[in-house]
Image (cartoon, rainbow over all chains, first blue to last red; front, top):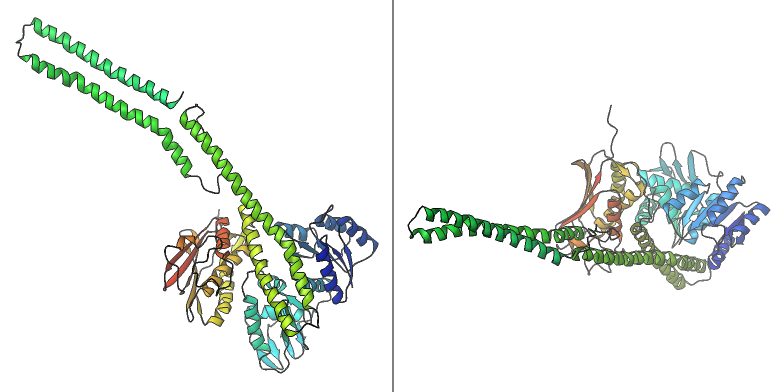
Length: 224
Length: 356
């Protein structure tokens, strides 16, 4: 998997590169829009992380240019302005995701993973992680054959975690997908919900499935 | 013409008029007296005639003078009253608006001019403070991004000791808090600068309230609080779904944070006087009446005893207030200390298309 990082702030570009490389992505870095266009033309990427505020040609203009050229590489926009209009404009121009700065690195990596795996997501009706199953039609969940009662929100949280099983899910991602919040409410809502969900799916079992990565997010997987 | 000159002229006019009235009156009285004399009236009645003359001539002149004086004062003070009314309407949001001038070059017109210049200077300063806050919050974002990223990168190092890891994670928690404050500040600064456009779509408020009720129950559970949804009528408003969610969650978060153990939180949504009325109450320590008007102020934390025990940055209610006013609604806080604190939000109903 090859990712292009377009970010003029050198330090930010450096740790993003490092984090993605640690996740075994091949990473190219550009510091301005024109270089980014040249790089995107020279070779195919699996995803592009594009800062909106760039010297010269800005991120939105790069994006417009790419989409005009029928380049469909998934694009994740970054912005320090974090304006709703900007987000909407970016998504209308064909961006696939948008992350306001300051972002959590784990969140960024999780989103890039989601972007590069798009289409490969499990389409099956019954999701399964180890002996935990979730039926997306009947909304019924079982662990080792024992039925688990879930509230509507718990169901959505579990469905999201199971669909991204094995991948780290950041706080903002969970808020967006499960709560439909596009802001960080600054409450411990997620923590409390995860605690409850954990009581339901993990408390009575030896093998824990729902893990907290402190300061980063949550991950549902069989082994730690 | 200056007011002094104008008033002097008017006053002179009134004096002349009343003197004229007196003169004419006296002349008529005297001429009548001559006629009386011609008919050889007794001399004793002269004194009577004199007092009669005073009543018939002096009194109207005095009354004319008084009325004229009253009219003059009113006329003189009228522009002052108008100016007072105009000045009264000025607040921090409309400093840019000018008080209309008469342009007749008098003292009050000059005062209005000076006043307009002053509000313009104030407006300028306010503008600068707003821009400063906006720039400051933008500028903070780049170093914050780097700080976060570097801390997270450092934490990826497998060779860290548990104590070092703990320190790093604690740093990250504080960074998250700082990020939240900066985000809130940016939001308010942008709102002040009128840079935020909210969506205006029909929103089923009752659905948002039900969602919020579920979230509040979860938030309240660790504190042993009881959350009740008293009524939830089906109501639609026009507005921004995300912001309204944010509003409800802010209020629920407060109701839980400032409650007492084993306390209660209630919510209700009903139609009242052509508005959607959402009320949330909590049984916390409450807010003393003297600080009640300040709860929506930025960074205002009511109880200093709570300052360090309750998480939050003191911007939640300011943001809530902004969201409500951006939806043309009102928000109100009432409190009976150590009994019940209620926050009431009123939003205009979505105008439904009337059947033809």
